[in-house]
Amino acid sequence: MKVLVTDPIDDAGLDRLREAGHEVQTEYEIDGDDLLAAVADANALIVRSGTDVNEAVFEAAEDLVIVGRAGIGVDNIDIEAATDHGVIVANAPQGNVRAAAEHTVAMAFAAARWIPQAHTRLKAGEWAKSDYLGREVNNKTLGIVGLGRVGQEVAKRLDSLGMDLVVFDPYISEERAAQFGAELIDDLDECLELADFVTIHTPLLPETENMIGSDELELLDDGFLINCARGGIVDEAALAEAVDNGPMAGAALDVFAEEPISEDSPLLDVDEIVVTPHLGASTEAAQENVAVDTADQVIAAFNDEPVLNALNAPSVDETAFPRIKPYLGLAETAGKIAANLLGERIESVEVHYEGDIAGEDVDLVTASALKGVFTPLEWQVNAVNAPQLAEDRGIDVTESKTRQTDDFQSLVSVTVEDGDKELTVSGTLFAGDDPRIVRIDGYRVDAIPSGHMVVARNKDAPGVIGFIGSVLGDNDINIAGMFNARETIGGEALTVYNLDVDVPEDVVAQLLADDRITDITAITLDDE
Ligand SMILES: NC(=O)c1ccc[n+]([C@@H]2O[C@H](COP(=O)([O-])OP(=O)(O)OC[C@H]3O[C@@H](n4cnc5c(N)ncnc54)[C@H](O)[C@@H]3O)[C@@H](O)[C@H]2O)c1
Ligand SMILES: O=C(O)[C@H](O)COP(=O)(O)O
Image 1 (tube, rainbow, N blue to C red):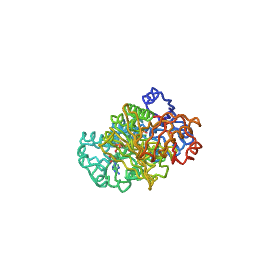
Image 2: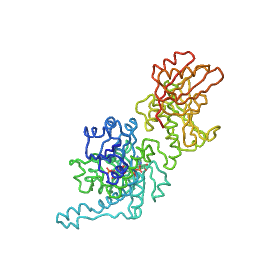
Image 3: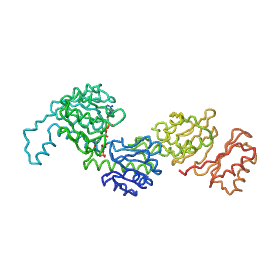
Image 4: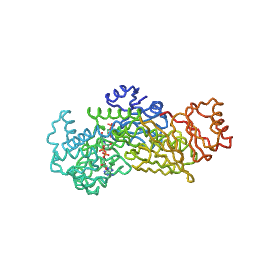
């Protein structure tokens, strides 16, 4: 598999990919048509915040399986477009958290103690000792906007340095905030008013874009603002104004709306604003962590194993995955057979689990069943985009479970319905995870779901099976296996054939020309 890496990641990650047998191509600082050309034959793309992974990238990258983000923020990746194209997006949300928290603390001190400004003047030969009177963080109030992974680590560190903590985060509880020694404030303005230092730790989302503008900055009277989260959350022009001519004492920024920051940015003209070029995650340990975590996720995706930090695909606990893995192919096959047999516009899909499998987290199994259902209808469908596809097309998807089962240890049934009729296909696993289709539209069968299959509906009359066999034989189609099921003697029968090759349409027509045969559906399954 080919892995294209377009932002620098640590060698440990690149080595991991190579050791797993994959080809690694590094093309740093490319964009536009160069990026589209480079990604055209890539199976994985690894980025940091420097690559704009937009719709055009997914259009160009037909063989792409996964985009790995060696870090946390995914605002540079169009996740909706990825999902539409069936591409997994996975980030590495743990490995650089401490680095980001430490940088935040360093920035608080840099701003409060004038470190960069004094440093610059001393290097220029000036001993400007009397120009810099700093502030202590001890006994001051820290306002944390966003108490997630990074916010929590910042809270621990600055709490231990004697700060009082207040938090604004609409998605956490008072108890959660209290665990970090912080008081949860349910109004952003109130949080800003209480704080001497405010630090931002939210993602950049439509909801957080420009969340801190001139009105909010007015509330930071004689205060400092630190942003090591994302540019775009704080209005930069308003911040420059609030520090330069307004009430604020200073600010420290690691991230900017446009990166690299434009030389004309007003932020660069204000002495009390300390800036670093997005260095929050730039420690040796953090870079090694995120590179290795990202490489591991790419390798897992290539091996059809769970991608633990997938943001747009059902994720599965690593320990549970071996138990559900054999059901993925089974559910997909049951869905594919059901959709092929119904052959109509599907309006709803139900995936029903019985027995042991009902005790598992089956999101990924359901997504695989949907993949099977949509495969006959859609070009590039997989477990990543199948649930989205169902939603986009207004197809109702339900999942039901019961621990009770009559005949099988576990049974997965996929029912498709077109508003008029419905059809169910059920499968189970025999010993050794051997998949079997055991019910089709109410008929009990025992069919091996692999290769080329034909499902025939015919009258239960002498000579019909012989007729089907001879038409197939006359057309050089060898029968590898067969299972016949009937409701009553002389009534309707359903026969499943496993064949060595596909059945061409003209052969289907020859079979259907006989009145005893009411339906023939040829289905090609991938060998599991
Ligand atoms: N400067 C760097 O190099 C660097 C390094 C790591 C992370 N980051 C950035 O730091 C930010 C935080 O990362 P994280 O891993 O802690 O994320 P996270 O998802 O763990 O935490 C984000 C928190 O923000 C909260 N939140 C969401 N919307 C909010 C809103 N409107 N108001 C207040 N709170 C809100 C969430 O509830 C959550 O608790 C991200 O933007 C990430 O990209 C930057
Ligand atoms: O979101 C992140 O992980 C950080 O902002 C780091 O971004 P980077 O990998 O581009 O340095």
